[in-house]
Image (cartoon, rainbow over all chains, first blue to last red; front, side, top):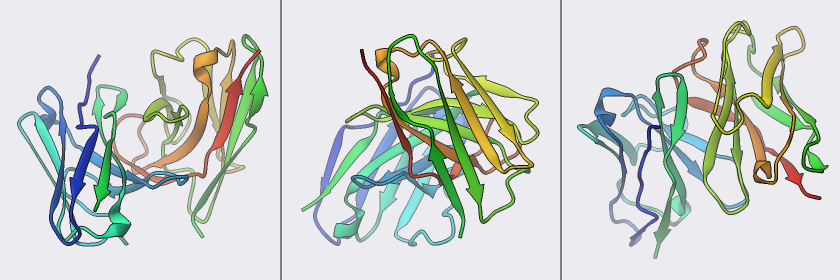
Length: 106
Length: 122
């Protein structure tokens, strides 16, 4: 079965850029989406179709996808961005989530 | 406002059944595929099932195939999942999520409900 691999944790200082990677076989041939989940809350879509931001998502969130790796980048990270982040892609008719990355802003 | 509200969760014994519902409001329900996604306590997201906009197509995760069925009533703007032969490992918060497309495969999960907890315990 298809797998997406994320680092368990990433730390970043406020106002610095943060990057979270998501790796999978030929992931660049698929569309990647990213979801933010804060403690006790439901997930929120922050990036879809590799690079697109839904309405209401700040411009500091951006995405890329090439080769075997999709990347979520947060420029000028804010304390409010501290959350778990999940990548997601489709493998045929199965939706696959990465294991999640805990972003700590300190 | 755009909203998905799940209901039907609770505590159930292994081997028993449970049906969850997800009521949609604030957007046009019928053109979009719908998903169930679950999250075990302290764990990550796990996709469970999807149904196409017209209900003609559905897919399931291997972990629930043959035990769970998904359905929808577009006249009631409601999504369902029937969970049979429940196992301890089915314990999780179950979220319904709207797809950004109408077909059962592809797209992103652009609206999420607040989730309903299912606990399988003897």
